Length: 418
Image (cartoon, rainbow, N blue to C red; front, side):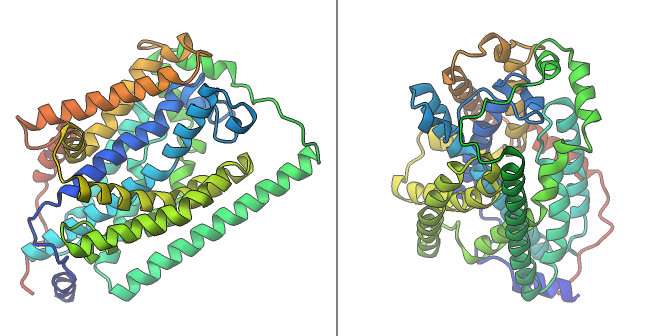
């Protein structure tokens, strides 16, 4: 009974049942942005396995200083723009979605989390299938686990959520800082004071062969063999960050940051000003500080910029006030974001791996331009395809499957009155 009263009291000021168009556009932009990170993994020799051996043939922002050729500069800037920022957006927006489901449960008078645990379990299963069959660096399983924790926190007091939010932030900052300090110390201890240019790490030939010539079943077997290793490390080391970002999404939603009113516009300007004003300089410094600062770069600086991008995209939409093909495409992709996330990785896999077109091996050494072209082509396919799909169907294919599956689960928690 107390949980229901709390739900009702803390419902968002946005009218229940009202769809916020900005959220769909932001989700679509986040999906396209995560592809901007993942496409470089697919396109590298060794692909998913290259990260385990430190390989990668495309330039970073730091490489552009020593080799200011057009290809190196473009790939470095592109990868810097995508790295970690849109993953942050996606994580915050997942928290927003959780807050919306919580509000809907409050409107119905349903117990919380109630049947939500089945939704999280289904999401975890989808992530496991995606990991096994398509892409090793899946985020859905991590989101599923985090959502269960945050769903429970939504039924607690505001004070409890604030403690969890700031504890998550502090623990994450300390963990990334200590890990980075250890990396810097280890590098200086083992490498010595030599300041000469180091050779780029080579990729394991077996990894190159696996994704350029290996069978699909061999690739699936490799992912399963490495499931409990480094492939699942990111959601573990970023768990407290995800809790913070989920709860930040809840707080922004309830404050009205995504509404089409003066409050929403004011909050978006603040997010843009603070996020980009602090985050961009910070992120440039960390990106140029060397590989030892990778954790700070991706998991501390980039999230600040990601929050700023939420405000920037909202600010742009406030001033565009139009529904052109780009806005329509992003909005449609946002409404089918789960399907879009899986499909983009499937298309990149078929384009780059030997089981498909094999572009990663065929175009190796030709520069970054084809990778950017592939990103643009897949993005166009996703936006156009989702727009056409929604003309005939109400939900994306994976969203419809999820909705149908969950509808078969009986609700063991009947609605109650406040």
